[in-house]
Image (cartoon, rainbow, N blue to C red; front, top):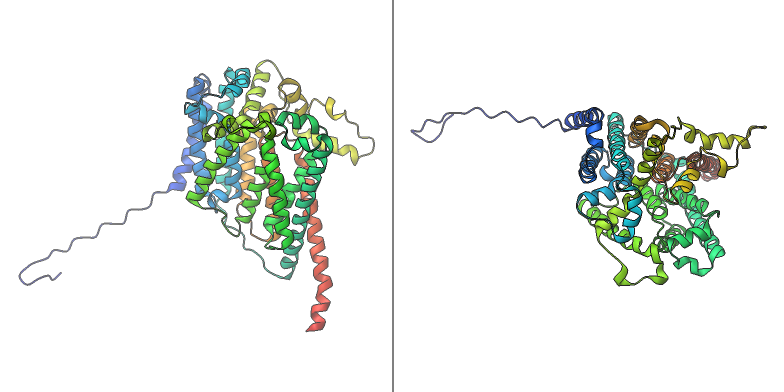
Amino acid sequence: MHGAPGVVSVSRPRPRPVAALPWRLFENITLVLLLVALLLFRSDVETLSLTAASRFTTFVAILTTVIVVRGAPRGMWSPSSVFFVILVLFHVGLVAAYGLGRTPTAHFEKTAELWLYRRSTTVALWVTDLALVGYAIGVRLTQLRSRAPAVSDRSEANLDQVVGVTGSLLTMVSVLAWFAVAVGRGGLGVLVAPYGEFLDLTRGSVLPLTDRLAYFGMVFMAASTQRTKLHRIALAAFAIRAVFELAIGLRAEVLFPTFAALTVLASRRIPLRGSRAALLAVALLAAISMIRDLRQVGLRGASLSALSANPLDGLAEMGSSLRPVSEVVFWHDLGDPFADGATYWAPIDRSLYYVIPGWTRLPIDEDPRVMNNIVMERSGPIGFSIVAEAYRNFAAGGALVVLLLVGLLLGRVDTWSNARASQCAIGIIMTGLLLHVRNTFVPLPAHFVIGFAALGAMIVISRARAERLRPISSSRS
């Protein structure tokens, strides 16, 4: 190489580019090693103190969340990511706050004494660790596929319109029905009543059905590109109902359809990015902390001095689904047999009564396979959990396998196209699985049957509409 006169320059070999770290391979190996460690060192994990076990589960939750979100095609707004974040919040939120040194509030401490400090809770944390790792592995096994391309044609445009109108109507019907049932049971005062009083007044009503209509309505609206006046009215109606539900303490009835709808919407446009999503999460946890206090006294008894806006309190409040896992571990330690799949078969078996002549069944409140009955009898209205149901049936291995299968499903769903039918199907699946995060399996088969029947009807209507309009367009041409 020639340089300045009289100066001899020596060419140096260029350094070889450093290969990018194979992060995906590294993360997959980490998941496998973590699973092996959980299985090999079970006894060591189960003998940890509650604080140490809480911190370890928090570490596992953060690690698996990062791995799932990093590998998802739309990051935190992919179906697999949204479900997993909700799963983690409802099962790890309490112990994450506890591990950070946030002691339970005076009100929660009375309940915590019944279950949080038992040995079964440490075992439940180990079971939860297995479930989280199993889910992450399941997602990773299906994230190797590319996303299917969308189809754009006349039939797709017709289905888009039908889906938008159907979603708007279902949402408005659900809101009107919810207010009619609630006020019919307890008068206008029920709208500002404490959580427990509201449950007592509306027990046995059709409110769960109105919630399902809102689930379907919200995700169908999100799947449609239509932004009509009807659409805006439906969203406003849902928002009005959400204000009263949150004040009463009905969090899941608002959060689940909202996040499912945002997940469907993200197939076309990411709702929130990065820092804004983080700020929203902190604000949401602070709001949930205030909702926790409101649900004890209701709007009519609320005062600013009695409300806490600490995000850690909101995180702890979200994590109450760990209790059902601890309860089922405790029951089986006392000698309860495992159900061997009976609780999953029960709602299907009971439905056959309506289609097979001569099929017999017990009254639902006497059926020991229906977990709602056992939980209410033994622990009260604490909800349930997808992890607890899997453990109830097949022990710790069941929690691992069931969540791995859910991860396989949602990892595959991540790759579906943004066609209307696909997005409606994603919404139906997401709302059903989110419902199961903190409830029993019982309503899921009916939820999926109703949802996919509605989707089938919308497809038939859109095709019939397309056939009816085709001669008109042909004659004009």
